[in-house]
Image (cartoon, rainbow, N blue to C red; front, side, top):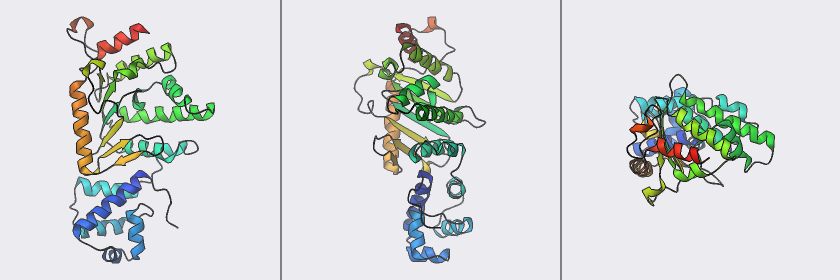
Length: 293
């Protein structure tokens, strides 16, 4: 089988980790190729995500690279043998590889932290809101419907048997942007409150009066796993999304998210009584915006 031309993010990430481990071990590509009875070019293809590595070959490489057995080791073994054809495969007729990469990342994450400055995050959107956001850039109604269905299908990571821990900080501007009109926005804001009832979901609003913190205009998502070495930061870009894997970059975005969370209002708590709100929190702000609709 010829090398693939468009590796998935999972395939690229595995290759990146294998290259990092090989270089850290001080092993040449030729020596690594001998371990799996392959040509030198195959190691290059593996490290670029263009070809797969057999399970027994991967095991030999990891052991030779000095990778100790544990969460990181097991995650790499699992990443190599995931088919990449989860539920998102049924949307391949419409949804591009970058969006399917996100669904796959979400499926293997245990923690997801996101900041959105202009829109409600996809995992918290109602069907109407999702359809309205997609319809702004997709002229074909059937394709727009398909995109919206895909976005809603991704939300299963919040409610499945082992849901991920989800924390969103949303800039107040997103609450005032009337996507789809007042009625759609009102139902979307209600959805934020309802989603916050889930024990694994935390939603905060970053208010206008919090000031001009440097990161508050930037959209980003931090995908965390049981093995921090495999965490990923996703930056949306109109031409091509960016996936960051460098430890220093990950630390920087984690610090930015922590600071955003500190500056934001207290999380939405649907169980708190309105009369107990001595100071403004995320719930009271969402309710105020709903009232203006």
